[in-house]
Image (cartoon, rainbow, N blue to C red):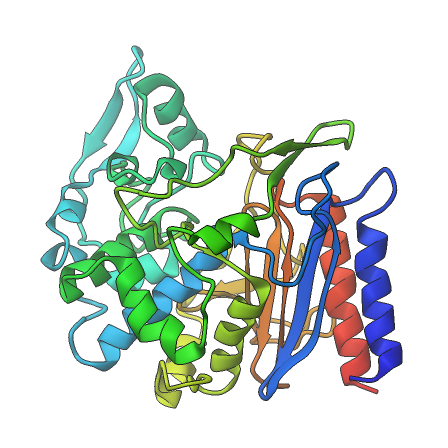
Length: 394
């Protein structure tokens, strides 16, 4: 990476952390097949406090956890231990007890019926099982408000026992699918999801700072989550930490990590499954998993149901998007320079990544801000990705 390009990216990060419309702190990196191409940090871990954001700062990954869980699932498929199209209840009987929500009675009681189809693990990876999130779905939010349905952030099994929003396989709805997929992994391996990931993903990739339960060192380097108010101001939610001894290792959102560690994961996907210290997936598995699995369905925009947690969100509005296992796929070339068929997703606290296997480049942008789809964060991330491609095409 030439010094001028590094300087321009550093300036981009610095510009995002100053002024009235800013992020408290950010770490961002670009990774190629051979390793990190750029790594930078700017701002503070906690707004108004001395510790600077550093490249080894620790972030709550939220939904950027999902692709790692999907990788654990795919490993079991490779080994013949998991059939993606078998009923998921064969592995986790409890998922077979979920019923379809048909509406609410006049007193607010949910009207439920048994589904006509079985949920499969493939549906879980594709987000077509019928599961949602309360911050993106009005019916789930009503269940939380009126029926006491626990939030997935609680890390509890009860939070996953929710009705299905439609007949399994018939629609795309973003939700708690990957938490259930993690339970499938646990049922097959007889180990907790974090232990499976440690042995089968983190160690082969040299990811030393990724876990559901933070080490003392990780805790010391943790960046605080911040809340942006309607006037644009920011306040630190210093006590907002995902449960550190959760009942369930939530495969959809529960990991903590660093940008450098996550880039090791991205790099393995760029390299057909080969990691720093070993292989995590076969090349043919990667090629299978990167393809759109939705057939005629498309990824939908995410509505803002709980404004404090998420704004309305859509990547590249107006552009068709599909879903792979388990990533968003842009069906057309993106305005940033990202080519069609690339993989990407995000985390609730405004973390964003992309994996461009065609050009052998990916990146990760990490902040800790609620609500999701924060305009300041999104625009700065898109500028960062655009700058990466501008350099790549020179």
